[in-house]
Length: 218
Ligand SMILES: [Zn+2]
Image 1 (cartoon, rainbow, N blue to C red):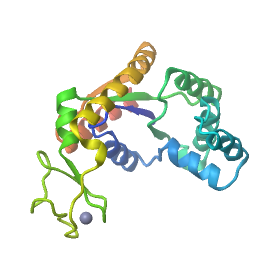
Image 2 (image 1 turned 45 degrees about the vertical axis):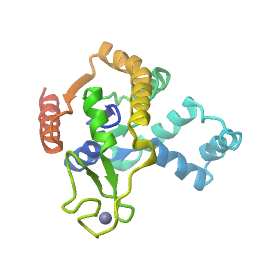
Image 3 (image 1 turned 90 degrees about the vertical axis):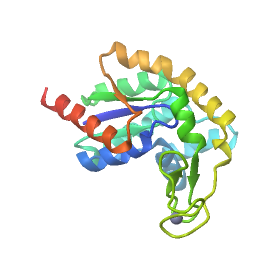
């Protein structure tokens, strides 16, 4: 099962990624983590990446794709993988496609967690996080038992600075602009599968697993 996950902020993509990784016994791969590891361990790729980072520039797509490809070649990814947060652009998608084709391991599907903007805004702008255990709550959808207090450890919940409504709207806009071409790219290849992410988390997970099981049997 080789998957790419797409979805706007607020669609619950991160949660679903963790659950799918668990269900299918495949790693969830984050480019941010891979990049940090390479830089910390001073690998060849890490050293090259650092020259861009030190100048305050983005690490070029090609270099990121090289890191991802290398990571996908590790034993734990033999059965498959979940890419979350990558690719972000059509250029990255093209590079990834080239690398996967060369390795004879094409993507199985691209899951698009769909949610309308107003719902995403309601979810995100009501979000509170525990600074200690990092559990998240939502005043509307998943409130703590006692207002403003973590159920688990009693810490005072905090609100992220970028969760106010205007910032949330902007983040969603940026996502839409960036991802629309990517959606088109994968739709054209017959890989895009849309999942309705407006339902409660557990229901979304069930539907996604059903969809993937079907795909595996086909
Ligand atoms: Zn807590």
